[in-house]
Length: 237
Ligand SMILES: Nc1ncnc2c1ncn2[C@@H]1O[C@H](COP(=O)(O)OP(=O)(O)O)[C@@H](O)[C@H]1O
Ligand SMILES: [Mg+2]
Image 1 (tube, rainbow, N blue to C red):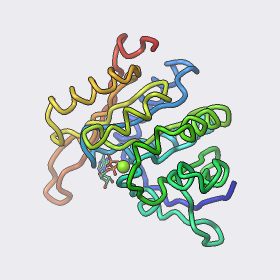
Image 2 (image 1 turned 180 degrees about the vertical axis):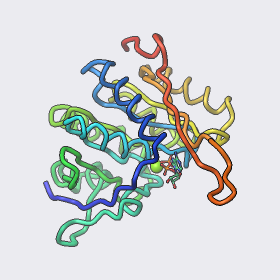
Image 3 (image 1 turned 90 degrees about the vertical axis):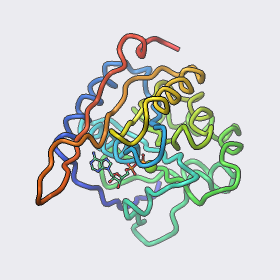
């Protein structure tokens, strides 16, 4: 596996607290909750932020983690993280793998954060849902299950396409990321129903971008909270 350099942002205090709660809950869900998908109703609610920061937080606890950017329709992770290979070579991603051009070990990159690997989305393709339904994706998740303690999948929003529901078939649990004021409750309930229809336990929800206080110099300060989903969410599939 090749190494890729990433630039990771500093986390805010409340996001750190939220991630600690999220991490604890995931660990207490048991070791059968390994492959976890993250989705939301609409874009920009903070999925990618939460996934990358949770991955980092899990590696602090000496866990090995693979982050999969499955948002093939609108991926920003490579650019956001300023991802670069050591020798400047092209980075390959999920769409290269799903189209049969690359093997899993060619598209999974080791990062400089000990224990954290990433699989970027790759170039946009015209038929992502169809590609995710092929056996290649199932094989990738099986392979990742054997190699890592956790596999975190950054999915497209539920409102946009059915990709997340297709991905859900291979996952052990889901976390919904909700930005305060970003969506109405009907849209959130819709995400919940779609996940229930996909028969995947909802492990919790992150309420992100919570407006904490107004400061005339710095504007709004955003925080976040994590809520476990109660007994219902912990039921087995
Ligand atoms: N808690 C937060 N406080 C401030 N900004 C945030 C927070 N969470 C996310 N953001 C910002 O909001 C934008 C969208 O977040 P992102 O994680 O890309 O969302 P998504 O993956 O759901 O589309 C990014 O610019 C990110 O830096
Ligand atoms: Mg994203």
